[in-house]
Image 1 (cartoon, rainbow, N blue to C red):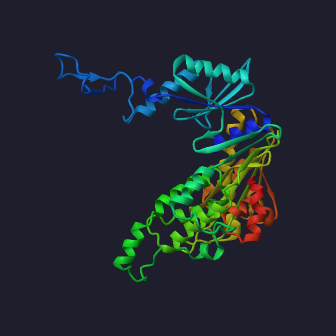
Image 2 (cartoon, one colour; image 1 turned 135 degrees about the vertical axis):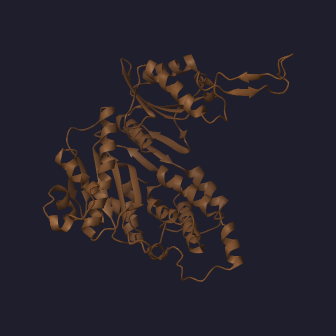
Image 3 (tube, rainbow, N blue to C red; image 1 turned 60 degrees about the vertical axis):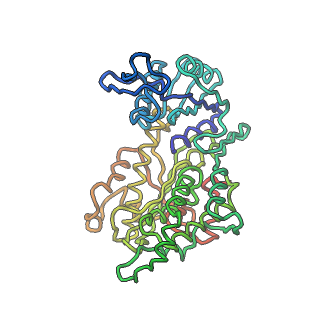
Amino acid sequence: MESVHLLLNIAAAKDWDVQQIDVKTAFLYGLLPPNEAQYLEQPESFAEPGKEDWVWCLQCGLYGMKQSSRIWNKTMHKAMLNWAFQRLHADPCVYYRVSSLGVVLSAVHVDDFLIVSSSPDASRAFKEELKSLWTISDLGEACFCIGIAISCNRPDRTISISQITLIDRVVLQFGQADADPISTPMDPSVARSLTRPSPSDPPLSAADTHDLARLPYRSLVGSLMYLAVGTCPNISFAVTQLCQFLDCYCCAHWNAAICIVRYLKGTRLLALTLGGDPNLELVGFSDSSYADCPDTARSTMGYCFSVGGAVFSWSSHCQKTITNSFCEAEYVALSEASHEVLWLRQFLCEVQFLKPHPTILLCDNNGAKSLSSDPTHHSHSKHIDVHHHFVHECIEDGSITVWRIPGHDNVANIFTKALPRPDFMCLRPYLGLW
């Protein structure tokens, strides 16, 4: 999803053409390799006279076969290479080509192609190449891709993406059409009270167990997850918390999930706005809470990255190790964010948009900043796992530079805790949600 966001960001900032096509019956174009013989009983009314007990030997893939998607992908990849495209090492589903007609970037999702090109002629040439091999549906300017609505504002050089259709469906499916909207996805007091069942807790009655089994909790959280990774970074923390209880949820977790639905109902028209600044400067924010998980005492970390001021990559998750201080929790968060920095830098480098100077990574802890750039406090940091010192190597080789930012201005703060309404409303616009 970050790749799609980044391509749309580049298209908006550079005022490039954004097109979408669909390959019809794509799996039927994949040729089975000789060493993967597949046989099929003759369909009724299509049997060969005199050979009714014979079987067919398949030469092409069929829908329903386990290897059909892989065979189609290999067929498509071979064709893209023949058309002088290069597959990115950063994301094997993104292809890049530079020709006399211009630059073409194509993100492939199974049989859907999202095409970003520097000129309409380059898009048309690519479409003609696709038509020469396969039957396609030319959907024109991209407006709805993988469940995400796309709206281009070329005068302002912005692209807005949203999932209003999915939000409306979730609101109706889970019975919140008449519910009152709320202003935040999760209340801070609720976030602190969501825990796993304790062995000392009394067992649930048969009626309560039956009622919980009827709650479509996993279905609801799954829908919220796609919204959180697609266009709603403002609910990432809340959804991350609820994902921890898919095997042990109770009514409190269900009510917390319904609160997210009510929040989405009131903010359904918010769209994630990409682009706006043609400079395409990559900047990251990193933050961490400290030991806020009541079950494991682990910290929650989050990061987000913007190109030209528009947030397109974000994450919120529990740290894998227990930390001993605020400084250590922030340092581990910096290390995790540095992994994303290197991937984004590789992506931008392969499409020739990487700036020659280090990427700025902002955090709000002086101790973590000092430890990342100069690990002099050995007695206080020698217990930290070696892989967390990766951020120091990134600073040494010039990939990253860490700056400090006041905590109330740190956008990543929204991914680490359930904020009170004033703080939440203050940071939400910086995510690009308008």
